[in-house]
Length: 346
Length: 287
Image (cartoon, rainbow over all chains, first blue to last red; front, side):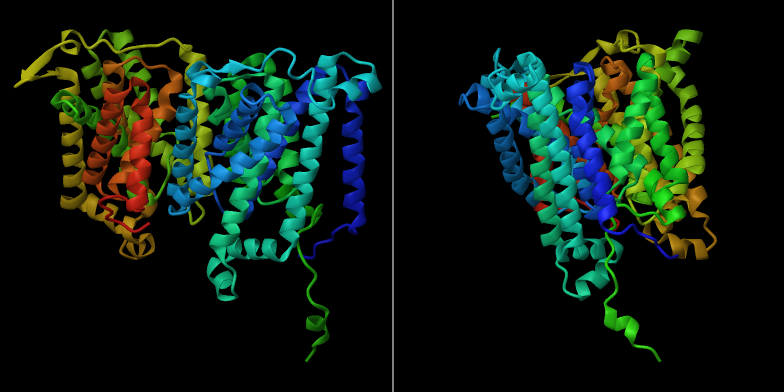
């Protein structure tokens, strides 16, 4: 089937428009909306990262909560033990998550398929139980950020003066913008990476590992690179999330449900292995959450059933099915065939 | 270094974990299905036994006998209606479907039974113990290890001595060729999941009588069970028992050094063994 893709500038224009609209939300929306959307944007960052791992690199991890927790704990350690600014802590969190991804990779990359999934989960549990032993950060019962940490955070002052809001609201707005920025950067980097020579190799491995190796693509090197980069993104997101949450416990920071299960459902419902998929998924997730927020556990049951239904009836997810039916492509990853190939005619 | 008591307790705990893992091992070995809902299915079994016991006033051991065919039927339905549709080369669909199932079962149980801790009351046998030489052993832990050995012995007899077992092994080795020989893999898979859930009902009995349970404890039990299966090696049931014992021993030894290290020690043992032997100790089938 012929695929009609927009001219390259149109999706870009659309993306800029959406980003601008989202960036303006704090100026008009109430604080509760900003806080809610912050959570959703963070979920989107996690989903974009997990989609790169599972959807493009074929690394089905159920242990990404490890890097959320490590990022969050690093940020707390930076603030409480070293007196750094929380935002410096976030950056440090990403770096530490990436550094710790190296030993994790050394272990889980020895395992295949299902073993890989279980291996990542065990690694996350080890991180959770290990950090629960860190008495300076409260051990198993956790600890809170010192009072006033977010008020004195880098950038809160200017935002407060500029918008004329309270310190607490200013820090919410700043975190929101940072999360939005992280979404855009993750999306941009993912797109550029997938369009690059390395990304092409990655998709070649996913589609046919043998053929890809035959033309000289090194699967382990590429997959390890994606594993490290997504650990970085996931770690950054973990740090940001826990500045707003302000309280950390090992169980919350390494929650399988919050940082991996929801993410899995978002990506699968939206469309795994497509770039717009996680965005669609996160919108559906948000809508479901709003609709069913009064029914407690029913919400999770519906989400689980929705995920199962997608796997049974529309394995490519909502976006994948839509794009398959209509030929619509936003953020297309394909490349034009070389001109010479079409010139050769019998 | 470690007292004899610690080692015996570790062995007995390993029996319980092997019981959790036996059904998983069967399903994983035959169809490479990573059933992330297995832990929650065991918890579901425990609530089923609890419910049967409450309604009829039966002893949990009798209630478990009634729960077993019900769980078999559930397994059969689950496999034919749901899991057979998503099995294939790609491991992601079955992984996600069972993950979804896990969330659905957990929250369904939460809605039906609340988050309160429950326990199956087995009567005086719960607190009974026997002295073997210098070591005191609880009767229930000894029974769970004995049951684990019996279940694995039974599954092995089924696997290596019956026509059904031959079909299991053939499908595990090469489903396409098995199909050419007149085996219907989908029915074989449904049998396997049914049997796995019968074993889950037995595991549920010991889960519920030995300690408190609530709807949320499935995933942690699942992880220990998976570690046992992977340490043991794909498709080896005795390996799964060995894997369970390794996890049990590591946990009690860790706890003997520092009570907070119990669970951590089990996970670390898993990592260390897989660093040396990435396919487990006694792999039978090739993954």
